[in-house]
Length: 550
Image 1 (tube, helix red, strand yellow):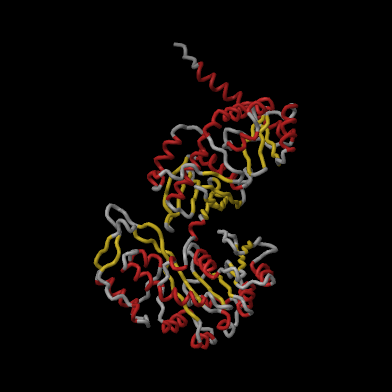
Image 2: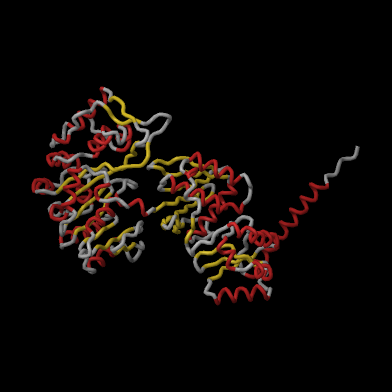
């Protein structure tokens, strides 16, 4: 019996071969003309770029604008020899556009021109700004809601929806107050996670093809090179939401299965805290209010990355800012923009922390903020600034307030000099707070009571010891738990006894013991008070802060 010949399958195979031959020919021509080749089926086409060339002109010139960042524009051409194409490029050049040309196949051109039909459904963004239109969608305020929305969008199998997907991701991240969005490509999927209240949470998994489109979209918005995949790149872009502009800082590094992307969300609302809203205990807050208004000295705040040090320092800067005060910062990078304050950013080569700080001292400042003391040179210049009539705010990476002093010793600062320079050494962490609408209280266990009693046994100011330790905060019913974060703080203030004690370069543990006489709460004590008040749980406090050993 003769075998059945599958005509449809053969025709499909031949069509695929013809497309492949056309793409191969376009690659050969791109090498001949020295113009990069691209495939518009693999790259999201930016609606703003598409609008630059009217559809009639695009068809006549066989050209599609697919990417636009400010005055930089990427144009895909079917042929560089068409008179209409040359005329179009001349006109765009006269309009001030910086043009990057790409060569495409007939199939890519058809895909690009087809996008004009979708323009009526999109809104034009301002140059350099990605506008979010779904920010009011309450269904995006949970991870489950985001998954549902993305499933619906991607079920259409339309690659043109990548901008819609990205808009939903950003809208959800802002609605859930995420600080970071992580894209992590694996062998068969690309995982997306969001950092919510300091914890990474799985949010969605994209198939590799969709992820490549998202990756291109993110690179385009961030001003990064599409064809660079083997080295790290950093960029930024702005998101407009309800009249507020939010900066997104993008970091891309190469990985085994593709490029890993992390986007840091720099929402200016995150630093809209008043001095009294940081969660600092009233006794400590009153002392800090005096210390930060000194004409000279230094406030060191310590803690790991993501512990809220920048927010604290920005809040302090806004507290001391007056028309009579000149404030200059040196940061890496500038994360939030503060009105009335001169902010500068290191470039890693010429304008380093040390070089920048020396230049700042010639600008007649009253208050200086140094983003971080990283080495001996920066430490020395910062200490000299504090000794010569300036108040310096800065950060160090140590575990607690007492550890700031040995760290300065290690950086070569003379222990006899430190008392004259350093006014305050602080430490802080961020702990998750219970949802106020669903939180409950539970009885403390006997073991917890013993721990609480032990933690407060070293506190010199007995008026701060909690009177009741019978109940602590607990998560609400039906899995309702934490919502938002608050800081826990500790501080050591320079006085004559501490100054004398530091002369012998003591250890951090000895400094901590010596400083207990000042009568301020440690981070563990501050956290327990917040747990006893129902703001958080003991489990959360001791997840973040090490309890003292019995």
